[in-house]
Image 1: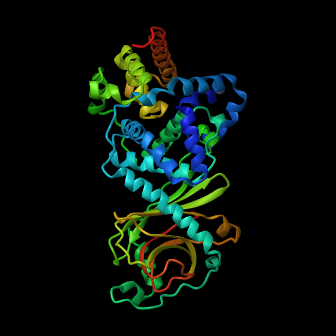
Image 2: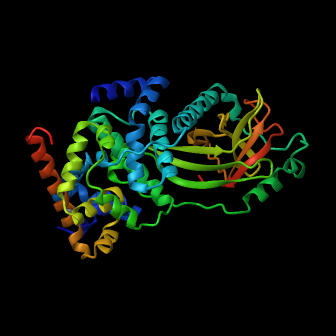
Image 3: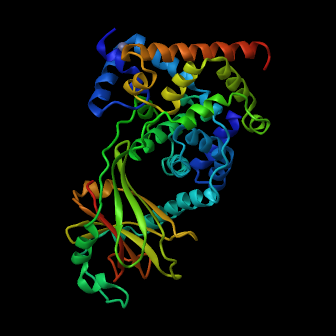
Length: 186
Length: 253
Ligand SMILES: [Zn+2]
């Protein structure tokens, strides 16, 4: 998986358009869905995906093995590009009803289950083990990329406790992912 | 624990001001607990994107994205071939075109007019350390390009810091289809002196884009203050050849 990505990336260094296209095909939906989850904005999601691939194409040598797994690197780049674009669009930071509702749909539909690779099911499942507030913490922190102050306001907790809540929620998540891995799946 | 340690979350989420960010990075170099926590945050969140519910991308997105990307690349190659074209010359409207008020009235007037309206500058945003490590581009400045009355086009120009290099990125849409020999040309103006800053041909959807390195202009101490896009009869003109100004805006490098 990573090997294939790295190979494509190397071909992109040689200006092979077909390699960029292949990489695009492979990640379009994941990146788009990820940015959409962050922004709830289709237009912005497309802009971000374009920006990410534009960077990969025009600015050679951004990635190398020291940056870790290619897909993780790509997702990190995508997240920061999205944060940047979201700030520029001055999206109103609002933990909307829509968001709250979407968190409550805990079971992924059969269709969705087929979509991402296997371990994504595990993460979703682990996420469902967290209570509503922990899920909310992760959403506000990771997907909305809110500031510490905004998170404190949304959760109505003291500023000084935000970091602790985030770490706790992430640790719980990790524990459940770990547990299901040990059981050999879900 | 120092007060700086409290900035970790905002640092991870790229929510610090430039100054705060620099201070935090300074702190990070010597604070083991922040280093550890940052690593922990990175690894604990690495798989989270996969939670995203699958969303079908916008219709036609792939074509748009790839043609924008490869369009800008073709343009760069084009620039390399035309090294001689970098020579600045005085920008004068040449021929009058039937459909162009602006060329009749002169370039200066056109630019002044085009600058009226809602040009807005967006402040640069701090990038995070992660971004720096990854060497991600940072937008220094973005302006919305204002259309003239030639056509109802729209566009955006950004100056992007890419390591030591600054790159001008221009994206446009709603451009009219052009004839065989024609091309859209981006110019940076220092007063009335134009400097070529890329050529492009729009795709079927009327979208076009250019990425242009500003290093050479910077080395020559060119202080441009305006960006303009013209429709040129040939793609390789050294100076605007009677091209109508389609889009323009004030911009600072
Ligand atoms: Zn610290």
